Amino acid sequence: MIEVECLDCGQRGAYHPLRPSCSGCGSLWLEARYDLTVAARRLQSEESRARRDLWRYTPLLPVDEVPAGVPMGEGGTPLLSADNLGLLLGLPHLYIKDERRGPTASFKDRQAAVTTAVLRQAGVREAVVASTGNVALAYAAYCARLGIQLWAFLTSRVPAAKMHEVALYGTQVVKVTSTYDRAKELAAEFAARHAYYFDRATASVASVESMKTIAFEIAEQLGAAEGGAWRAPDWYVQAVSGGLGPTGVLKGFHELHRLGWIDRIPRIAVIQAEGCSPMVRAWKDGREVAEPVAAPSTRIFTLSTGNPGRGYTLLRKRLLALSGGAFESVDDGEAIEAMHLLAKMEGLSAEPAAGVAFAGLIKLAHQGVIRDAETVVVNLSGHSMPVEEEALGEGWYRDLTAEQVAGGLTEDGLLAALSRLDLRVTRDVLVVDDHPEARRLLRRILHAHGEYQIREASSGPEALAMAAERPPELVILDLMMPGMDGFAVLDAFRRQETMATVPVVVVTAKELTPAEERRLQGRISRLMTKGEFLSEDLLGEIDRALE
Image (spheres, rainbow, N blue to C red):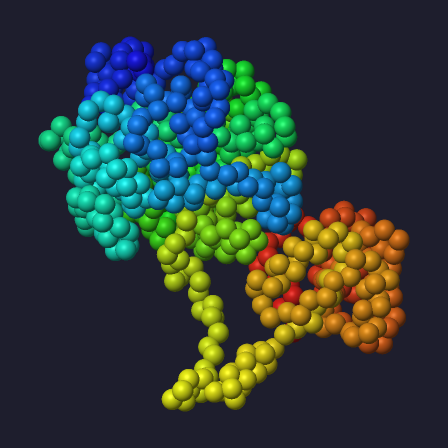
């Protein structure tokens, strides 16, 4: 039997999903409590260790046993090393928790799986959710699997395709033409009238407990990567609407710390869309209560909780008491740029909400809040499919027209079409850097963003030979190379008639002395420090230099 404790009066009692309030004071804020000694023993059992989904952590979840019929592969998502993005940001210990791998492609699968398991155990047959998309989709799938009737209150901003998918599972869809906060109010009233279960997110025991499994997996996966004990990162980064994810993750790390399985609780970076960022504003103003945003202005509708209520107050209190952290906001454009960067650097397609998380990571790294020696995990909360057209902009495809005849495409038409494609303008760029990872990153940036012919040199002499054979239109040069360093390469270039005026962009990790800065003055187009620029910054400098 799982116990819950009231966060207001401290009274304890047995947990039941249809009794969401404290019997002593009526508070809706209850929290699950476990015998950690018993839980630790069960977690170390052979049966538990053999599982590869979130039910590996059943002893610290509000169910008596692994529920039959529920598992669909939820949890157990990979922790990916983000080598390219880490190199770009100067964060060599950057990881991505890929939550796109669940049954409905978002981290909300954890919430739906644990909650529906709890409902089945309690004999509950009806449930209600309010959602901007992902929660409803996850619940729809699991409720269909378990024979639970679901009512989903969706705002009118949810794409029709996602509404259709929710309805496909047999869910009763209620389209609310108003804000997400109003949809939640209507859903709660509907559930109360009919005595149905209503998911209150940060105020729902099962939902909070489900998010702990993200923390458990991260700690176990980081430890396994180093062949040792469970380990916590220095930072955990997630975009939020109402704050459920970080609330549960923080509780999970806290329980592991109490067990003695990790040596610290990571700092949490909470990222919001600038057009709906009540938590960020309250945190930066030092306020315990967030002032609601009546009319969210972000296009990232999945992060449009205008009133986080007490959820923010509790999260703030625990962060200050346990680990510290940061609250930051980013605008929609920064989120879209981060989506592009993640896709082009790591091959990972992210939903706009996850783009907010990565844009926040970039901002905190550039501010020096997150430092280069720290281990960082970012939650890739969901998939981008289908990709919003605004995320691509113009010019994302090439037109290719070939003349057709009755029998199909003629050979002449095919060759002519391909010739037109080959005639697109390319610029010849020489990359000079002794580190293969740095060359690979620069090549990836240039290939992903433009029409460039790229040649690579791993040393000064090799660069001089390649430039003598065919002078490039631009050089990207590192300064710190063994033997012939970048200064010497630049001197040699400027002595050659064919290279005297070729623009040079220096990209280096070296901290220059005043004398070294004078050596470069007037001889290069731009000096850029590794780890302190994004791909768009570099491309902007290249375009200006080539002009």
